[in-house]
Image (tube, rainbow, N blue to C red; front, side):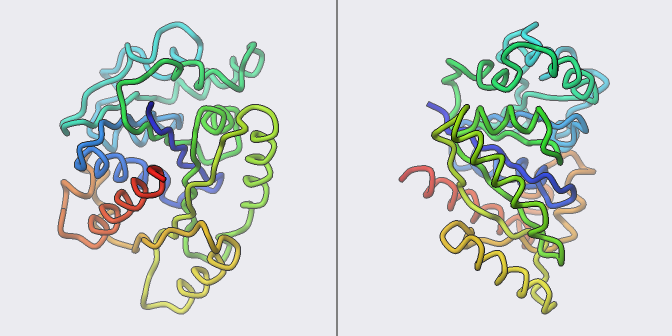
Length: 254
């Protein structure tokens, strides 16, 4: 059975899509057959893997509305063992329709039911506590929580953790916090180390050993439609995500 990981934080700009793409890429490089589900109406994971959204047929919007099976929208990428279920802005309209639909919280879990072709499924969630985000949490085994090393990093996390608690009570009792990932760390600033210490204080057992540095190559890679491991495999960002993928395999194999 695939291990399903939702990459979630309701704050924007914390590195969710960057983390989804690069973790998935390095898992695939480790020989793990990996699927990224782009579940954000911005569709950044889709364009970040070099897919032209203008040329797409069916996407996750149709899957969630039960019009087509997940397997029918999955695309191979340029990279061995890495696959993508794409999205476009149409997913935002679908979310409005979904609000009135039956089984609206569990549509993604339903779509993943019986999917056994992958070792890992990475869900790139939208930057909000929306119906799509809840679907991701209901479908997932684990939550990976990227937290930016900035002053307001922990603001709003309480709400997300409360939502996780409610979902565990009702819809997905086996949901676990895989780990908290400090992103955009700048070792030259006192602020980054202060925020790291603060995160560690709140999540002493769950913070990843790996941190993601603020790195120009990471920022440039999406505009080239490639993971950082392809764009510049010797960069700090690439080395960090490679180490993180190994850590994820260790944590999910226990």
